[in-house]
Image (cartoon, rainbow, N blue to C red):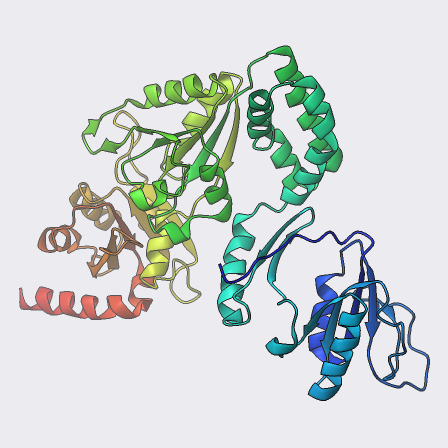
Length: 472
């Protein structure tokens, strides 16, 4: 370990910033929300009296190049942002003699400490540093953490701290308190804190404490989480947080291991994957599993590829869970249609090619109505077909019969967003042969419409298809 990053309380501390320009203002902004006395010495002479307080940071302004004796008295931190290195060194020496820790901007040898990159959540602060060696790398890591750390974690920490003595009195053993905090800080209180509801956060913590004190079981909760098209980087930030806190994960076969690895190692996994013509776990049983696990007081994540409310039967599962009087929350995911089209640079709508887009399934309910091919066959209308590889011959014939031109461009994206992704293109009339020729097995999304010809990679495929059809 090259560095040690201590956590120094700022309440009542005196922080002084000397210098002008953006470098000084950046240091001031670091402490704008801190409970400290912030003093800014711009080190410039002014004719007109400046404002007493800086409007952006709340710092008290003391103008003038001359820094009198005693100016550093009682300071905990002093930041020096002046270009004259000799003057900066003199000021740093004076500040140290007064007992302050000194940071001279862009001058590591004169620094007592480095300014870390911070993820600021109020009571929770995460500091990152490379000791000045690679600040850009630290900023990238901070950006990643900003998305992973829930926005309300600081409020949650403050509310928990206010209740700490009460919890210690109510739950005498360390094990009881540990189980309480694990439950309380991941439940309703966390959701209230993320919404910025301070009183609601406190009430939720107290309700959980009352249940623990009375020995009542903690109510479970179900989360329907869209896992996106497969690339872990396309998970939403909220999906990552929910997955990380899950006790049980009920997942489909299309969810790759790379996404499942984002969960806690001790989270239990239940595979309910389905394949065409083979449902290892019936849909009704999946709903029962969600309810059974939630009734054990667990946080249950139902993880589905794409978005669970687009041909994922998420609506049915949510209804079943609600009917059992169990709370359910839906975390949307990036749908396969959006991800695959974007990956292939196919604009699903385009002012000159399509004013509407429709999502349909190639595997409608067995005893349900047939697709309305007449409306789907209209021109300047993009059609995105899920699960349509096996039914492509029927789909192609019915659309052409309903009036859609056989020359309509078609694009197929197989294993979208994954390393093995493939993209092929052709025409509506040649769709069945296109699938056979390229041995498309799925999972795949079929895009039908003039917009396919707007995608750079698809254009060459369409040209080759036209040559083959002309030769035939």
